[in-house]
Image 1 (cartoon, rainbow, N blue to C red):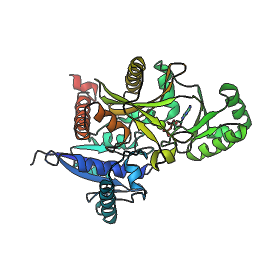
Image 2: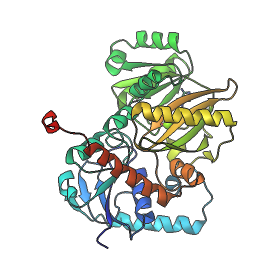
Image 3: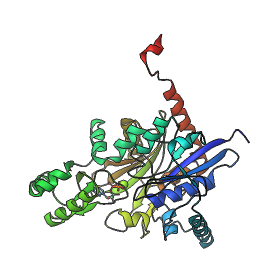
Image 4: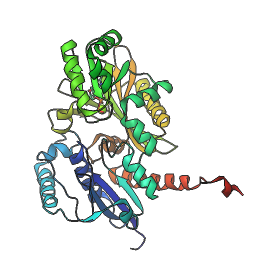
Length: 382
Ligand SMILES: Nc1ncnc2c1ncn2[C@@H]1O[C@H](COP(=O)(O)OP(=O)(O)O)[C@@H](O)[C@H]1O
Ligand SMILES: [Mg+2]
């Protein structure tokens, strides 16, 4: 008593991944050692306003069972457990308690915050910036790495600089596409050909992403992507296995085992991720040792190139035929229920969920301390 770490969990958010975040928050609350932590839930509603205290609240999705498995991954949990989870979801759904809050009113209530918001307005450095400004220690990636990691174009530019192998890509502004789509499409055809992947630079969960197979498809794909962002990235298609690895640490880095995602659909799209639909997860992935080593190396390089901290899940394509490992993206706030890829990869590596949370909180506090060493003004040198 008294010495408990007051752990704030900021969850929800103004994002398409709102519901996943509720489950993550719920999972963390249920998992942490109550003797060690006093959890303070902070709910960011869809309209952007904050509520503090009260149970984890909000509109949970109908298909909560599929969702809680971190992307429709079926693990064959028994029905009782699924029922229990659905009940919990239902109960907390009814009690949207909590007081209106803002970042300053939260300051005195917490020692450290675990922001578990995914996607834009959460994983992109905005929440992190608010916490920096308020001087509150927090778990996970800092402002710059969050922002760069959220923007697929910027991220790929940084990877290129770090010498990481990746697919060919090109970026356009929405205004360029709207002004002269034919010339944009000519350039894409010349550089990349078909099929190609069209993505809004700043989204997640495969929202707004299309595989374009011809010029008509490309036109539609660009139109769709332009609804979501003003920066658009187009990538060459790669036929490859999709493998993912976890990175944990600030400066000294630990990598997890590697997992493989096998989507039944044409690609790992939003439906496959969150609505179930036969996505298989294989942990550990079956890979030759030299490939596994290369993936771990590249993951660390990517993490450092962004100046990551705390955690990241790094996603790769493995083209077996050409024995080529290509980096796809870094997720600086990956799905984080006990049944999401990142925690499962570390559980397999010997770090169970509860311990993973402990370590992340510790890393967040350490990073904060490290930053306190910086002097603010040159006069302090005297
Ligand atoms: N260049 C590509 N070649 C082949 N498949 C791709 C390519 N880019 C994306 N995909 C498929 O689309 C999915 C989502 O793309 P991704 O860039 O990972 O976006 P998100 O940030 O939404 O996860 C990937 O998991 C993969 O299945
Ligand atoms: Mg992805």
